[in-house]
Image (cartoon, rainbow, N blue to C red; front, side, top):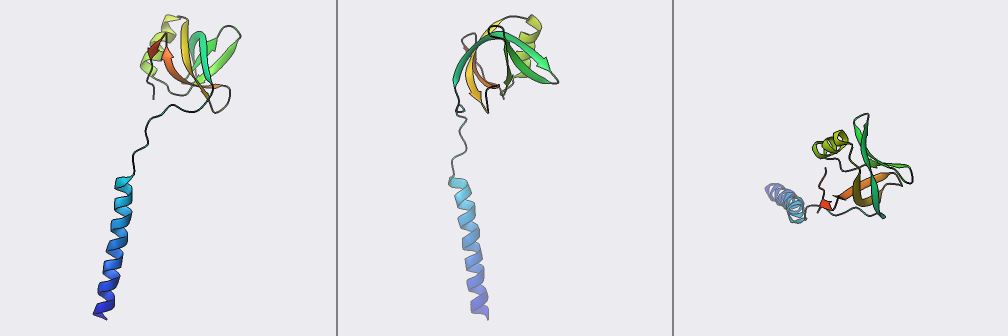
Length: 109
């Protein structure tokens, strides 16, 4: 009886060790650019119901900003300035992942 109990304890510890080690050895997800069509948009930042948008003037189009940086976007919203945004369309034709604003790298959340 003690022999069976010892084997079950060893097997249990081995399984726990394997599970724990597999979690440690996995690389964390790298923050890569999402897949999607590359696009350049000239427009103004707008806000509606807590979400930020880019309102392109010609042709008229609105894009929901996926990776928002409220501090930067709010200052652009208040300035009313037209900006050039480089990014990628994700999850359809109206979701924009911003990579650059006016040629400067952009890191949103």
